[in-house]
Length: 256
Ligand code: AMP
Image 1 (cartoon, rainbow, N blue to C red):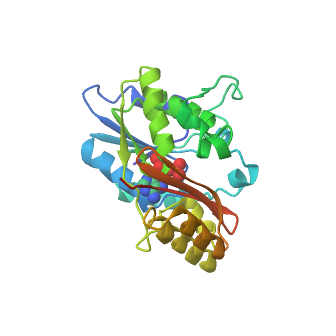
Image 2 (cartoon, rainbow, N blue to C red):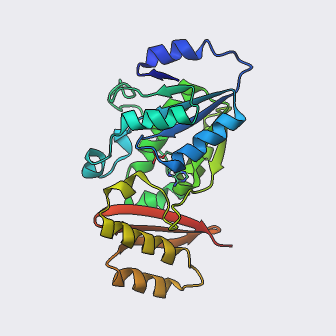
């Protein structure tokens, strides 16, 4: 496994990968867990070469403290990547992805970007789409894998690829959960033992929706001291965002 930190080094290396080889790509912000590993494993299974990026993208954080508190577990991430048989880890320096200080970016007012995460995290999707476009142009994957954990993100990336005439395929991967039902997330690591219990109860209650009515679900979450930001249906999915011990957790389920 080769770790590349410089963009020019990656570009030189990319040009040596023969055109007939398929390249699978997983974009992450590090702090890897089994959710990320499932995307990596699918890529390794389906492609000749797998590239993993680790880059905490500053432009998609609408909350400065969330960015500052984002865990850095780089050495451990490399161990996971290696165990999953990643070929290349692309981990650019903080400023390298924005040599123009973010003066040219992707802007969306697509209706998916205006609701749920888009409504409560202003600017988040513009920052995310900007970095994903840059990464897709650099990596030039055959298939890029994204988790359904961030379902709006996955839908917007499919639209991005279509609108910018990129040729890669975007594949959505099922949410990986702890045995407790809690969706795996880098943010779960910030929870205390008690907070983790609350988060597990949150996931369990949410998965009972819509059999458990919206009213009852919200009442039970409130009783657990969990502050819900939104609980909405869109298409055939239900989406939720809530705070446990100040940590923002999101989840979604297909319910039809
Ligand atoms: P992140 O590092 O949180 O930006 O996530 C990188 C990729 O992993 C995104 O495509 C996420 O949707 C995906 N991902 C994160 N957590 C999970 C999970 N629990 N199950 C499946 N995919 C996930």
